[in-house]
Image (cartoon, rainbow, N blue to C red; front, side, top):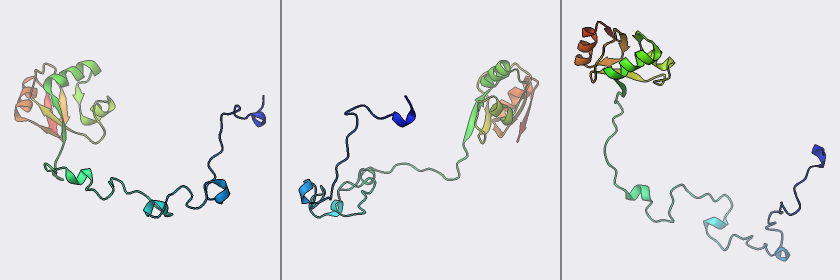
Length: 148
């Protein structure tokens, strides 16, 4: 068997409909497009969401809420989670770069430290934001927190 001898199995392929090749073909005249209207014209393209003139669904549904363009989204890290990360990865210095390297956050995520849980390890933390109680708990455990 060679590449130039390959061909599909018998009956596996069908030739396409040859439209607009005269009345004798059975697909002449309007060429299977029916009579008149936008769909019969060349260049017709259905608009996304168009429902035949009926009010489209996305326009019928009520619009709710408000998305602030100035919102700053942080990835929250509680003290118990930071404790688990330091134990699992053997880290004493935790920064956004270290978290990214460990595959915990994405490259441009902002990190915020929150005070839920207990921290026993002496950690050097760098974050973009932190709660006052979290900062107090880190310093109580003998660590330091730097806001970057």
